Image (cartoon, rainbow, N blue to C red; front, side, top):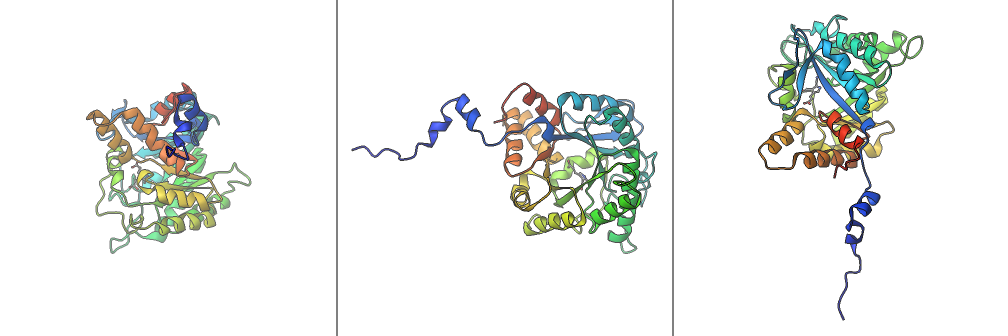
Length: 335
Ligand code: PBG
């Protein structure tokens, strides 16, 4: 008598129609958010060499980018500013005429509520030393003085019209400080409400490499005294729980691909939405490998995003947001 396999798991994989029917996870354009770099003082888009396909954009391009994002049906855009001048305390971040705040205002006007306008809330693009906060006399990043600046930055971004503030500086207490400033200014009571997205579990990562080019930041030292250590999983979960306790409306894990375990644990525990940021290095790895002919670009992109989704991200910040939304709108599967 032949010993048949008792369980035939290939049964559900036999045809595209069956595979499509039983797929557990998929993506929809609304779950994608496009990071956008807006640079002060340029007239035309400037390609970022380390991120093929991604550019720095002039301020005047913002309304057009918003239209493109709305047409693609994505959930939002995350704005980053590249200022012409930087200083020790990141003055450009709190100035209503600073490049990021002007970009927010233009995007909010163009969007008119059709998608969410999100802004990175951090000082590294605005400081001449490239750190995410201001420095104490001994050269360390001064947590509590930085919180005061973040609170002012939160108000500047809210005043400019941002729907969601992306707190990415990894200072202790940043969510509470920004929420208190927004509350005190009447956001949520006498004025419209503003959402706090906490980049809660943000690891000190080599995968931010190309981003430094994108925002032209030259960091002296490293960020290991405030961003998380790649060796630690529990700490990432704790960061998310603390941020939720401080009033974060959404929490995020970043980078995404190398930290899917943290993402999955945060997704299991979090009572608030959980997002992930597929960062510049994750983007560049696939683009450069595909350009070298060693992987199938589109399938690798789809697989990387499905992995992040499967681990529990409800929305994903990705530089492929518009392109992938286009595929999804055509009915293409990502797997
Ligand atoms: C902080 C910030 C960074 C990124 C997003 N927000 C850089 C950093 O913390 O070093 C990285 C995003 C990417 O690499 O795509 N402003």
